[in-house]
Image (cartoon, rainbow, N blue to C red; front, side):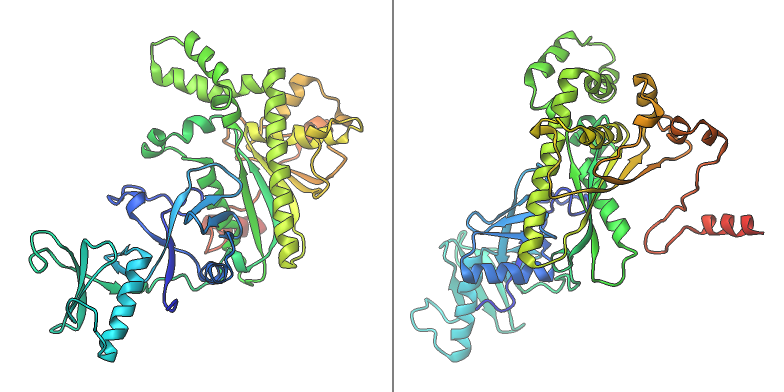
Amino acid sequence: MSEDFVWLHHPLTGENPPMGKSNTPWDQTWVVFPKPDQDNLDSALETNEARVGVYGDRWVVDLASRTVSPRYWKVASSEVVRALWHVDGKPLPEEDSVAIEEWIEKRKAGDTSGERSPDYLALPDGKNFVEYQESSDSYVVYGSGIGVYLGPRSPLTRGWADVPAEFGDSAVPASDLIFCIHGMGEHFWSQPSQQNAGSPGAFVDSVREFRELINSSRSDGESRIECIPIVWANIIHEDDTDLVGRVRDITLRSVPLLRSLANDVAADVMFYQSPIYETKIRKGVISSINDAVNEYMATVDRCGWARPRVSILGHSLGSVIAYDIVKIQDGDDLPPEFRLTSNMDVHVLFLCGSPLPLFLTCRGVGRSDIVPLANCGRVYNVFNPTDPVAYRIEPLIDPDCKAVNAHHVPFYSGGGGVQKHVQVKSAVQSF
């Protein structure tokens, strides 16, 4: 009976691309799980497992509640269904599909005893019916309405033709695990009103795009790079309701958009420079990374895969937070809540669009104390030359580096490799 049944879910924030200007709400849209996750869910159903990791274990399906929730970030859970028959992509309840399959089997065998009519079936809810139409050899569903044969009929379709056939993240181990820490303003940009206005959108969606981009060039199908977002904005703007209330009380009512930008974006820098919130943010980020690393490594060990290398990427203010977290690991008397788990060494620390050099200058940090020594293999400072908050870090270590041009990193567009204008520029420079 399980043949051709398919597992579906509503679109997931941070996993499925935003729907843009689609007229169909998310709660009326259905996405098919990739084939590896389909197989894992079917197996779990047979063995009565309670929870199943999907999408590379970034999400967890609770089979009892039929919901799927993110493992490493916070968004609302989404409904999960197991279905076979549907109307224009809207799945019928599982028990309805089972009833239809049993009824069709009986019809084919000529056994319709116990049915009110051999040509239609009352579904388990008692309000809807399925009818066989001999002229088109098809099935339709309709409500009881005024009369059984008077209600509008909707054609039924069996099965889904678009089940993703690729391996999927759940079938491929990760060679590298990158934790991505957002910068200032995430609370502002992640608000639905800003996303609808064409803003950068939620950080978890940016990490999804980044994950897809860096894996688009890996054609071997044997490994991938996993990227997990670390969100700390809630520590300031949601968890500390007293702070939010006090900021609201002192905010002038004029130019509300600019005030919101100041409170939700620029003020993040001031909060992090406050000893109280600097400590809260560091502890929150370290706790999130440790929990994610320990849980991810447990999954890797359970699957018998090789453990991935772990790196940290910080953007904007997030790069300052990432650096501070790695740098304090040099201390011997570090409290446990500030210590990164022993399950990881930092392979690479990526500073992207980073104001860290300015922070270090303001802190008066000496040259010999800049580079983190413990638990960190390499540090890369990646920036766009037009980024107004990005700075070079090399001159802080060696002043002579101020006369040395930064190394150019070719812009990779995904799919087609390095963009054409970069290839042309490189070719011209080679002559």
